[in-house]
Image 1: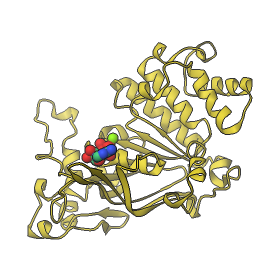
Image 2 (image 1 turned 45 degrees about the horizontal axis):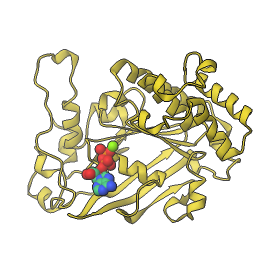
Image 3 (image 1 turned 90 degrees about the horizontal axis):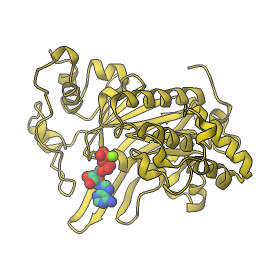
Length: 347
Ligand code: ADP
Ligand code: MG
């Protein structure tokens, strides 16, 4: 990728500067727990990853694996309580967001780190025109006057390919289709030119053809603006074409991290292997889907040893006793499995 956007490499406007190689975000040993009536739910149990400008990282995992909680922790929108972050750091351009004063942190939300949610309908305000809602980003954060903010909103609506943007700027959310509403959410999320964009299952609520269009739009915008994009999904098929790297989550941990092609070709964790086997393939029509047997663990009482061992076909005694750390198992390959080599080189 050769195009560089001046603001994401220097960020002079805001004073944040990426580290070497465009390093933007470092999530380091993140832990999140929820204090509930039934006890403490250990939702995030030591998550590690980083993100650079111009890079797309996919976070993949079954429902309940902690993807959204991780995103919410980065955005700083977890309700605390019931959430608590007992351990870990989230550094943006070298600064720990978790210890930053709230007013400073609030100013990172939007211009530095921005997020798109799964459900565009409930994220938009039904009583205001969409153009007004986009323009509000400029008025609120930049003090832009009304007519310039409106002009910016129209330009953004055109950029996210909303047909007839000029005429529809005054329309209300319910007058748009699901796909068009998601485009409006994307316009709002990129309005202030964020360095990091987190998209949490941005296409799950949409039908398949619209899914592909939205995914392509996100990929285009990421490339054009050299954003660091975190793409959260439970669907491996959705991210194959757009992600550079993948982090696979299970029970609030990263089980495997790799370059997307290597992970697809040769998974190094039994959980990833199970996810890959559960993708329906065109050449296997009629064959039974190999879903991973068993259920995700109870976060109130995580199993001893490896969190995945009760569902794992590779499990041995050591897996029931020792929790494997995420470690390098081949060049550029990380896996939290005692038998990563066996999985990687299986026959
Ligand atoms: P997903 O990977 O599907 O996005 P989440 O990150 O939403 O999963 O959730 C991870 C776990 O944290 C789930 O078991 C969920 O029930 C739990 N969790 C999330 N928010 C809360 C909350 N406010 N109170 C208690 N538990 C929560
Ligand atoms: Mg989620």
